[in-house]
Length: 259
Ligand SMILES: Nc1ncnc2c1ncn2[C@@H]1O[C@H](COP(=O)(O)OP(=O)(O)O)[C@@H](O)[C@H]1O
Ligand SMILES: Nc1ccn([C@@H]2O[C@H](COP(=O)(O)OP(=O)(O)O)[C@@H](O)[C@H]2O)c(=O)n1
Image (cartoon, rainbow, N blue to C red; front, side, top):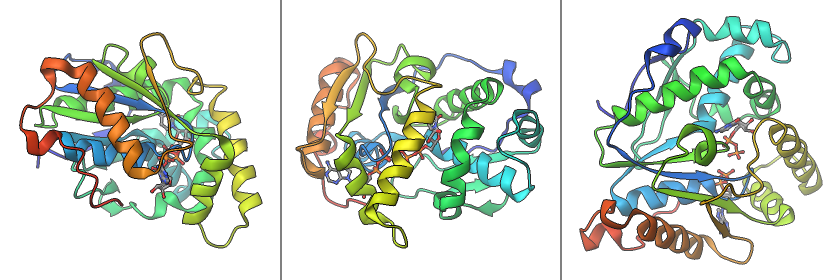
C-alpha cells in the first residue's frame, strides 16, 4: 500500500535519500496541544492529501528504546537502538496507524511514559537527520498529490521550501486545557506542568514558538476546532494557489468527522 513504508533508520541509510519529489507539502508546526494533529488530519481530508504525523516517529522510537530498556537520556544508547528501529506509518488521514516492525503502537506511543521519554530521544541530531530523511521518503512515496506534514521543524528544516507553511499556536493555558480533556488520571495542573516542561525541552532543539520568515501564523486560542480547520485551509489554499486541488467537494472546509 502506498500509504505505508517500512523505514530502517540506521545511520548508514540516511544519506541514501533526500530525493526531491513533486508531492506538494503543507507544512504545519506548533507546540504541544495547539491542534496540529487533529487540524492537519482534517485539512488533509479536505484537500485530498495524505497526512504525516512526524511526532509519531519520535514517539515510536522512544517506545522502541523503552522496549529495549535503553536509557533514553543516553544519546549513544538511543542511537544504537535506532539501528533496528523499523518505523511504519499510515499517511491515510482516514486510517491512521503507527507500527514498530509488526507491532501496532498507535495507542502505546501516547502513554505518559513515552511522552516523558520522547524529548530525550528527539534532541539527538543524528537521530533527527535519520528521521527527517525517512519523512522525505514517505512523502515522495505517498502516491498522493500532496501531504500535510505536521510537527516542530517542518516549516524550517524538513520542508523549508514547502509552498504552504503554517505555525499553529494557542495560549499555553488553552493548550493545557485541551490536552487535559483528553487525559485521565492526571490533574489539570499536572498536565499543564508536563506540557510546559516538554515545550521548554523541545524548544531548545528547534524553535516552534516563533514563525520563520514566510510562515503564516494561525492562533487558535479563540477559535473552536472547525474555525481553526477553516483558517488553516484558507491559508493553505491561498499559499498553494495553482497547486491546490480544484474539486470543490475536496476544498470545502469539510469539518465533519473530527477525531
Ligand atoms: N481550535 C480548537 N479548539 C478546541 N479544541 C481543539 C482545537 N484544536 C484542537 N483541539 C483539540 O485539542 C486536543 C489537542 O489537539 P491535537 O491535535 O492533539 O494537538 P497537537 O497535535 O498540537 O498536540 C484534541 O483533543 C483536539 O481535538
Ligand atoms: N517534527 C518534530 C515532531 C515531534 N518532535 C518531538 O516529538 C515529540 C512528540 O511530538 P507530538 O507531535 O506527538 O507531540 P504532541 O504535541 O502531539 O503532544 C515532541 O515533544 C518532540 O520532542 C520533534 O522533535 N520534531
